[in-house]
Length: 247
Image (cartoon, rainbow, N blue to C red; front, side, top):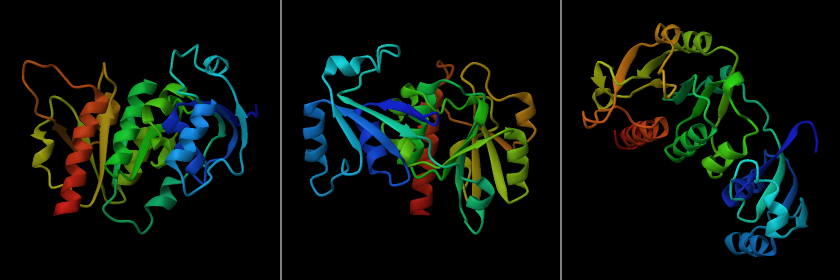
């Protein structure tokens, strides 16, 4: 195994990695059934053409998922990290961008689910502290269900300085907080926007709140304390995508 490589597993995670021309896939381990399934699902392209493929039994592949107790579905791949995208370069000459920013969120399952929703609803990128991003997590890749290949991920060393810089470049920063002043559907969501979500237990850090323009909430049944972060994010992403398409 190369120093820059790691293993991912699961049907969607592996197939989407193989389809992504920017992702270097070093080796693929498949059951015979998984190989047939790849050809069934991709009859017009041979996504295994330039990759070393090894056929294994389900039991042999179990060793890649035993620690995490994840199901591999007959698909395991050794991949390299994608090239890091520069945020400053990305925002040049682009308008009406929507970013999501995670403050102190570290759970790989939540991050993966949120990435899946963000890619599904055309969010332009995820901003996350490099130290908190579980970049080689099998669980995150599995939860993202292939969407790691379809979302721009900006790993930054400091969330607050990044928000400060983006505010200076005409971005509005919205913190999602159950105590927010307005329901998020009352916002027009025009121009460049950043949606900030804090950790499950503690919300946004006080210091991060200083770099937020508005606090908004998602109105839910008042008997319920809060939603899971990935569910909250999905609701917001869907609504903002709908507004962009229909306004």
